[in-house]
Amino acid sequence: MLSAPCRVTPASGVLYLHGFNSGACSPKAVWVREACAHLGLPCDTPQLPHRPAEALAMAESRLAELGPEPLLVGSSMGGFLATCLAESHGLRAALINPAVAPARLVSDWVDEVFVNDTTGERFTVGPQHLAELEALTPARVTAPTRYLLLLGCDDEVLDPADAFALYRGACTLLHPGADHGFAVLARHLPALLAHGGHALPPAWQPRPHKEPDDP
Image (cartoon, rainbow, N blue to C red; front, side, top):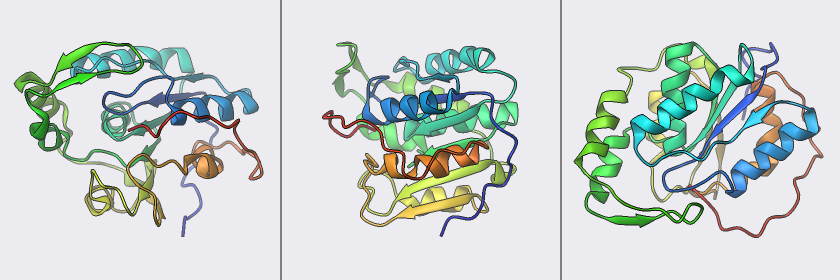
């Protein structure tokens, strides 16, 4: 069961951060943009670089464009980046299957070549990715009531128990059957935006999209 949002002051905008090797055109990014457009709420879904430090710097540079208190939304690796920003700026964040130990996750991908379907960029994960992630990882999560967790019980990439433990005390939604891509996000957007103090009609539905699930 999802408890009521811990704060109700309306967020001044929404910054959505996509997952590793995903993009600004992913289904979840599109759904968040459409929901914000319905509310007339400023929203930014930047295409992030694959290097963690560069991605965080870009995300931080977009905050000022979204008013004094934006709501951070992040999926997987984007959830980790959203956590970094929430901790450093005292902001609210909604996290979808967030990576809680990203250096450990990426260590399995060292020397692997990836191609980003959105940008066409080819890149290789190297030791510098691990070093940057380790340097960026907060020592702990403070004020867990700032966070909303949306966790898929059948996440095949990350163990939802790890996120539940790290963000203990956060408002949490566990969705049975949902995997890492969390393709059910559209039905939970009212709860997500309620965490930012905005009321999206429960019956609201995004336009159908045919893109595959994304991180």
